[in-house]
Image 1: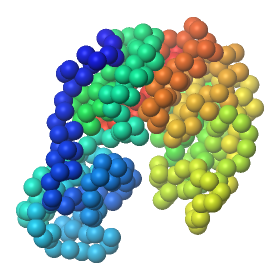
Image 2 (image 1 turned 180 degrees about the vertical axis):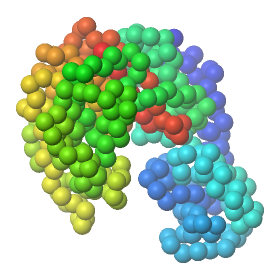
Image 3 (image 1 turned 90 degrees about the horizontal axis):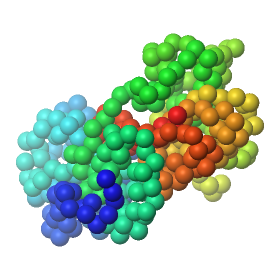
Image 4 (image 1 turned 30 degrees about the vertical axis):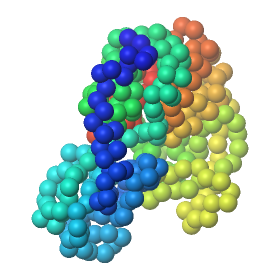
Length: 354
């Protein structure tokens, strides 16, 4: 199994052909959906010089655009699904098909943050990607890794097959003495899953920078063994401006000081090395800051060799940079990769070190 020019021989180009069709034909393109994923889809289409006229959504049995109801779209048009769950979106669209009977095609692209992946990028980074393949501990990981790249290249979800539960695979042996760090604790979903699977831990440290999510997370009260922090993890101790999305949202992000928003607030970023003296399990899903957080945990990782479950799909270079960094700290780590998105979109690719 290797990333080379032969890698492209058996990849489906159907979605890329559809993209070419949308570029060349004159019918306008509409996006079904107005959420986070539709923003990614819209950016993708615009970057490919496809004119997106409207985002529309369904409320009850009626179509709306920017809060205004409309009955039909004049002339022929294309629909690109901007909802992450393709099967759900197609079900919704079929429920008001009579209003969209002039559509010439309904299309879906499986996208992730590196949707601009092309043959040149893959080949130019093939040495790094092949080193990852050589390091991975099991054939399932190697297959998942190459299938993920095939999906990213083809915009198709046909190569993806998820495994559950996320962050707690069968090759992780949990004990009652775990000291857990949950980076990107959100509203407690990982904590809930941990308690469902194993029930007990020695300490659990949950870090969540979003104030909306933190307030929801606070339903778990701080106690002698559970610690909740309205802080982010990084490579240095500092204060950053943070933009909260809507309540209980994953769309929050760190922003520049020039960002103007009512949902702007300061968040403290901390090095994990300065917070804890011991850790046995680190989980990180922090929107692209995973490598920074690991660098800020380097002493703990070197000294304690914690189990690590870290998302590597936010940045293309994280596919190799994170495994390289962990390997540099502990040469005795073994590595596996699993894919966990129940919607079969290009997210939730997790690297496990153990």
